Image (cartoon, rainbow, N blue to C red; front, top):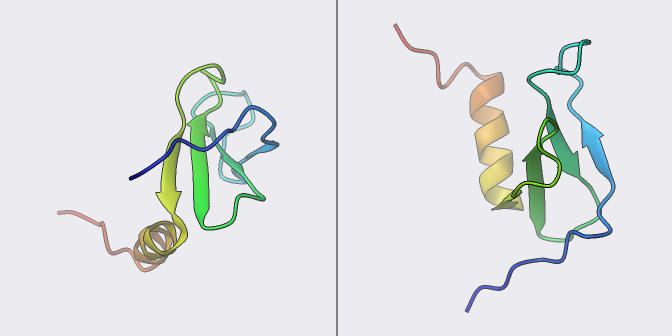
Length: 71
């Protein structure tokens, strides 16, 4: 059974790759053991995606290694 984590007190941080004018920003919340909450900073009241740490780590590793490059 999966439960939705309480992110009401989460402290969100913008990605260092976010652009300076405030658009296209991804935020992550630290301090949640076993999960990585991600949200769109343009819609902070909106839903957050929650990934297990191993899945998020694999995703980031693929990005760093150009694993998702097409064409």
